[in-house]
Structures are given as structure tokens and as C-alpha cells.
Image 1 (cartoon, rainbow, N blue to C red):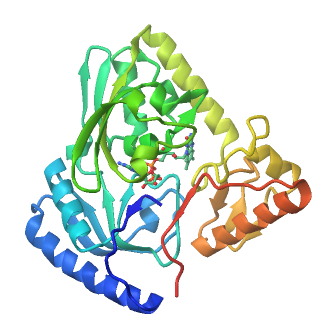
Image 2: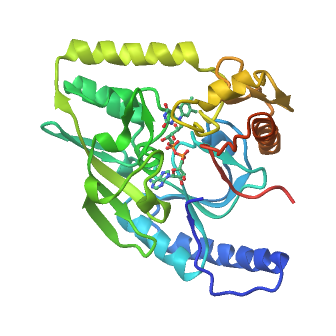
Length: 329
Ligand SMILES: Cc1cc2nc3c(=O)[nH]c(=O)nc-3n(C[C@H](O)[C@H](O)[C@H](O)COP(=O)(O)OP(=O)(O)OC[C@H]3O[C@@H](n4cnc5c(N)ncnc54)[C@H](O)[C@@H]3O)c2cc1C
């Protein structure tokens, strides 16, 4: 979980620890009320389910959308001083938030301050809050190829950088020239992508830091060809993925030649249900919410599929979806 905790406190029991954290959270909220500009969003006990594509999960103690890099740094510094954990939420399309929600601060870069796209020839400077679909669409309008694969990934640039999201044989870091991020200590870094060391579905630097933007590179190309590729990619998705709420692929592929979806299908698990969570009958690696699923339902389904893969094929499945937050008491 990309949350930052610095804890000099040594409470004796878990319940003492959570009572102490609750006091620090309240203290932090009051300090943030005084320190953040009015334009920044700041709320308590914010429901998070509707901020995820799976539509499950409990509330955030504090929810904030800073309206500038300066406000973001102020928030990080105050949270760090009070040892309150901070979790960064993108568009919630790779997350399973537990039913008890997330303790501490959940921070989102959805404010317009982090949603700009600026062109300089074939280069695009994009804020971390920009939707991937908007990047693909704007690149098409500008006659730039190479970013079409982003069109159907329902995340923000920040989430795609953290996950090194990929599709159609391309990865996010294939098109990143520079990454701008803020460390937990509030320092701004702007580094060439080659120095970041992104790997399959992960950018390790962003485990502990917050991406605020990136410089992306496209290649000038014929507009009709770009449009055709985007339409082909979009059709492929509509034909192969369910349209109910989900968090995309639940598990990483166990090997490059064995997609997790095929394995789950071969185990005969399509359509398996726990409560309102179901293994999709369109794509077995997508677990869908039929309407009233809880995180507990989805976690139960994940465990069922995992144990069948272990027992019947000796394969240990690892989740691609990130599981965060706390269970209900
Ligand atoms: C229908 C569907 C289809 C999908 N298809 C694909 C696909 O083809 N390929 C693919 O790779 N994924 C796919 N996904 C998964 C998901 O869309 C990607 O992983 C996406 O990059 C997540 O972005 P997000 O903004 O939603 O991040 P979130 O889900 O909100 O967060 C994911 C992680 O990124 C971190 N994070 C978010 N913003 C930042 C930031 N600014 N700085 C640092 N860390 C940050 C979070 O803390 C968390 O650890 C799909 C999901 C769905 C629901």
C-alpha cells in the first residue's frame, strides 16, 4: 500500500494505537483547515466506494484534493509531523478498499491544478490527475501516435505511472520522458524516466512518493491511422471485458505464457459468486460487482480462486489489484 507512516509512538495494544491515531487525525484536520487554501478540498469521513470502479470500500478519515503543488507539500509536511499515514488515490480503478475504509489521509490529484495537458511539439506535459483517455484523445487530435494504448485504461496518469499500466503490448513508461514527483518529505524531484527503473506493473520510486506530472513523448503520424488504431483497441476491449463495475484484472499473470484469466477459466470458476461479487463470465480475471458486493465478498472470492489454483495446479496467484484499508471491526 502506498501509504507513508512515520511512527515515533510506541502504543502497547492495537486498540491504543488506533485511539492515538484518531487523536492525531483530528489534530491534523484542524491544522489543515488553517493551512490549506479555500480552493483545496478538505473533508472528514469521506465515502470512498463511489471513487473506485469496483464500487466497494469504507470511508477515508480525511479526504483532500490539494489545489497546487505548494498545498500538496503543506499537507505532506503536516501529516508527516503528526505521523498520520497518507494514501494517494487516483481514479480508483486498480483498488479494492476494505469495508472499514482507510485511516489517515486519502489524497487525490483530481483538482484542475493537476489536470492540464500542454504541448511542445511531440512532447506533452501532463498533470498526474489527467485521465488516460484524455491523453490518448488529445494526442490523436495533435497527430501524435504511440499513446493510443491508453485510451481504454480507466485510470489517471498518476495511477498509470505508479502501476506502469500497459495494454496492447505497450507500457506507460515506454512514452515517459521525465517524471515529476514529490517525496514524503515534501521535496520536488524532476528526473529522466530512464533513472526511475520502472518494471512490469510497478514504478518502485512511487511506492513512497507522489507523481504530480510527467513529460510524455508521441511521434507525429497520420491522423486516420491513429483513429483506426484507437477504434480497434476500443472494440477489442468491448468484446473481451465485462461492462459491470470491476477493478480490471484481479491477478497478475502467473507466467508470461499463462494468463490468469485462462487459468481461472480452465478451473471452471467463471460465474462463481460470493455475495454480490462474481467471477465474470466474459473475462475470468475480472471480478465484478453485481450491485451490492462488499469488499468482504470480493476478498472471499479472491481466496476461493486462489486456493483452487493452489490445490489443483500448484500455482500461487498474486493479486494485481491493490488491497488497501481496514476490515470493519
Ligand atoms: C475495466 C478496467 C480495465 C483495465 N484495463 C487495464 C489495462 O488494460 N492495463 C492496465 O495496466 N491496467 C488496467 N486496469 C487497471 C487500472 O486502470 C490501472 O492500473 C490504472 O493505471 C490505475 O490508475 P488509477 O488512477 O485508477 O489508480 P488507483 O487505482 O487509484 O491507484 C493505483 C495505485 O496507484 C497509486 N497512485 C495513484 N495516483 C498516484 C500518484 N499520483 N502518485 C503515486 N501513486 C499514485 C495508488 O496509491 C495505488 O497504489 C483496468 C481497470 C479496469 C477497471
